[in-house]
Structure formats: structure tokens, C-alpha cells
Image (cartoon, rainbow, N blue to C red; front, top):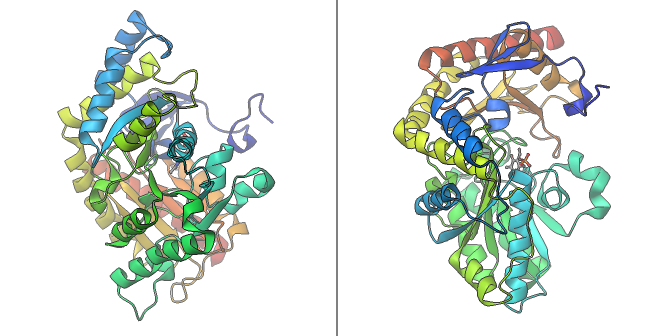
Length: 444
Ligand code: PLP
């Protein structure tokens, strides 16, 4: 084992020394096209001049001031920008240091809101099977990844998991996409009625499912029906945009494209673009005011919340989105990426689905195209593809599914928004070679 707990304890990973645009370089000078932005983080690439300048300026002036004593201009401006852009009534921002902290904050805020409203019998959450919300205990409880939950199951708070909206695997041939979406959303109502709706705090979901299922979008009307059900039973709707938010799908907030409003939204990853660790929870005035006019204090907090340097970096990230018109480019580049992937992979014997929105895409690998039978999750396919891609100088995010054995393997792609059309070609060719050479050697 390495002398630090590297992910999966790999001691043979290359040593990263430099980032430039969409490429990372190791100590030997080898370049890697970053097609997944790490884990959907590096949305501006690795050496953005404005972000670097903003960070240098901030560190020279003031690296850190505890938010119990001070605000910073950057934090106020960043909060203003986010709330101006957020749909609905999301008017209050709480800055933290990452995605799991944002989720923990959201779950606790939702619970405290009901306690202050005199509804302290609400103690449970509902979430979805194909979901990932982070690795801390609260986030694990609402997450749907059985493998990650298993060792900690006795420690997790009560949560019920319903099906995700995943038409490729679960839509019946006899039903329309719309009807499938409604049927799946209605599972929430059925489950709430079984649990007793007034015992439930919130329903939490990713608007576009990331790591566990691979860029799965919901069918039109699904989230509108979810919103209706939450309203009918007084349950809060928490949308986890840690991975799919901050422009990744072509709009700043992914749920803008669902035409709904949330009670709480969580963001992270692209908000800092990897230049600084940052996350945030954004809540409605109703929730904020209930607590501020009640006990007056949200019983939560972390040392690095509103970190001055992280605020400066994130503000520069959002400014770059505007200055470089990057969100329309995400839509355009996303369509080009989808086209290129389809051209290359549609006829591949082991590729079942190519999907996603904006620059958030996935290629799903299946053992049998007719039955959609996945490869065994024990086949180690994802690790081999990841290693072959790294050999070829490509960073992608192959994952092995763990839920009902259903989603088998997929490769998640989340390249920086600055990727050019030529680089999309390079990405596609290297990905094809990685997938093809591994599947050929394993299964032919
Ligand atoms: N929520 C979603 C949707 C995520 O994809 C992730 C991380 O991948 C998290 C929460 C947790 O974020 P972090 O790893 O920053 O704690």
C-alpha cells in the first residue's frame, strides 16, 4: 500500500505534475486527455488564466477568514449570482467544502425546518435506487449504491429507495416514454402512502443521474409529477446537482430543463472547477425564514465554509462561463459528442446505449444487445477499460453497476466545456480503441 490512502490503494498510479487546457501531464511528460474532468469536476480545464489570477490575488490578500466573524465580498457576490440564476425561490446559499458536506447540510436543514414548524414526527427520507449522494453517513443513507452502503447499513438513518427513471432498462414496450415516466414517478406516491406521508422529510434525487447509472435523464413530465406529489404530501424536494449542475448539461442548473422548482439544491464539483474544494446548498426563503424566525440558528457548520480563496476561485469560474459563453457551447459540443459517439459505437456488439445531456454523456456496455443483459459486475471490465484508456492517454470514468445487477457497466464522460471539435474526435477514437480492445480480448 502507498504511504497515503490513494483511491483503491493503488500504488502504481502515474504522478500528475501539470495541467494545461483539457490535458493532464505525468512526471514522465505523458499527456492525458481529461474526458471526465476527474469526476465531472474540471469544467474549465486545468489552467484557466482568469481563475488562476483570481486565486493568486486572493491568497496574496487574504487566504481565510472564519465565517463566524467575517463575510467576504466574493462570497456575497457568488451567493448573489447563484440565487439570481436559480429557478424559483432558491434565495439563500450555504457554502461548504464539497458534495457530501452539501448533502449533509441539506438533509439536516430539511429536518430542522420541520422541527421548527412543529412537525418533528417527520424522520425519514425517500431517494432512488440508482443514485449516489456522497460517502458520509447521511449521504450514504440516501444513496442507492448497495455496495457502498453494505458495511455501514446498521448505522444509516431510515430511508426508502424507489426506482430511478431509467427507460433504457425499465420501460415496457407497450407504454410510451411519457407514461413510463409517470408510472415511475407515481412510485413515490405509493411509497409515501405506505410509510405515512407525514413521517417523511424529503425526497432527494439527481436531475440527471451521474456515477451510478451513467448520465441518465428522466423522461419528460417525470419531475413535474414528482413535484406535484411532494406538494400534495408536504414533503420537501431536494435536488442533488453536485455532479450534473453548474453548466454540465448546458444550463447552469440541470433542473432548469425540467421546468420545476426545488426546495433545496446541492452543488459542488463544477462550482470550483477543481481549482479549490467547494460545495453549496441553496434553500428557499420559506425554509430559511422558518428557521431564522424560529430558533434563529441552523444547527450545523464546518470550519472551511465560505473559505475566502474558494469563493474567489468559484466567482472567477462563474464569470468565465459568462465571458466565454460556455453554456451554449456545452449544448453544441454535447450534441457533437453524442453524434461522434453514435457514429463510432452504435454498431459495436457490446454497446447498448449512448446517452446524456450537454457534456454529460455515457456509453453503456452490455453482454447481449437483444436482451440488454449486462456483463457480470464481477468481470472487472471497467478497471481494464480505465487502464487501457490511461495507456492510450485518455482519462474516462468507467463504472460497474451494483443495483439489481441491472446497469452493468458504463463509461461516464464529462469533458471540460472548452473542449474543441478536434479534441472530441480524439476523445472518441481513443475511447473506441480502449473499449474495443478490452471487449475483444475478454469476450471473443
Ligand atoms: N452527489 C453526487 C450526485 C455526486 O456525484 C457526488 C460525488 O461524486 C456527491 C454527491 C459527493 O460529493 P463529494 O465527493 O464532493 O463529497
